[in-house]
Image 1 (tube, rainbow, N blue to C red):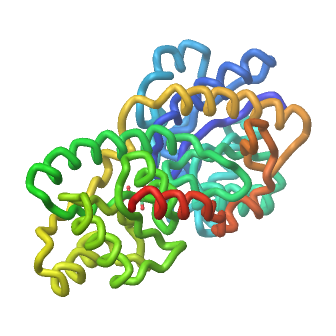
Image 2: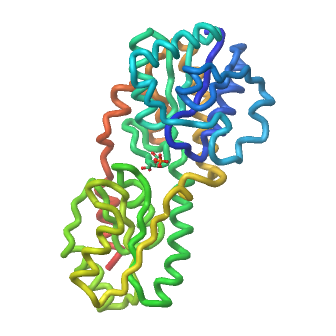
Image 3: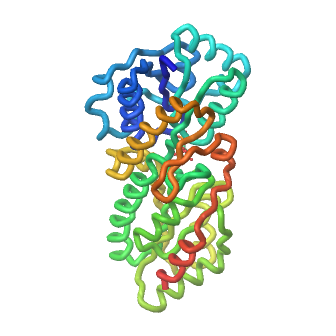
Length: 323
Ligand code: F6P
């Protein structure tokens, strides 16, 4: 491998810049040329590509977002789109790719790699933590910390007004942010797609809390089709329990921004080094994962399986601690 291309794709995540920096510097360290590809697969199709030297990635480790920009690219989902991307790669002399993104981005990478026999290594870049085969994804820790500091603030007003707050957090169809955000902020419950939470059960938990010692409650709700989101949940609870003074907060895209935590910077840096080493070892079509603090290779086909399990001990811990 003489020249690699690096791109970020899908939703941005804090720590993507640390990953770009690490990939770039590790490749240069090993004598491999680097090309930064802008706007994800879109830039690979249109040729928005720049030669990257070490100074291109100076002073970015602390910045949120991605200096390479990102996009979701429907054209890359088509055979024609991928053919154009392949032509651009050849024209720019790129012989391997590092793709930083979530499951949609890695699904695209898998298809492209199989179609054109291109070595591609993926890095899990998403706040959702929903990729299979890795304990953590780049951006998850920072987003979790953002959620916790927001909920701490909501707690102040919730307890002053003795209110019940439903706080909607991101995660697509995965409940990691909601569940761990609830544990870390001392919330009363989390409504996540992986576990059905009956409305009566929820009201009972909250009612018991109010009857005993609590004068306010906070429930984290995963945005997702199956939970219906915080608005829907709140409407249902309010209708049946008019005694609760209910409010809804949707945290939205603030969860994707901000300077990455130390943990995300370290994770991204380690994974970037591993991505280049993987390519040098002849690995292809794998995502770098981390399991019990050791870096591992996860085949794309496994990483995007979409059924990463929620740890039941965490569900139990939240239930026990919210009495
Ligand atoms: O995958 C990251 C994520 O932030 C999800 O949690 C969320 O569902 C989605 O992206 C939002 O996407 P967009 O920024 O396109 O609205």
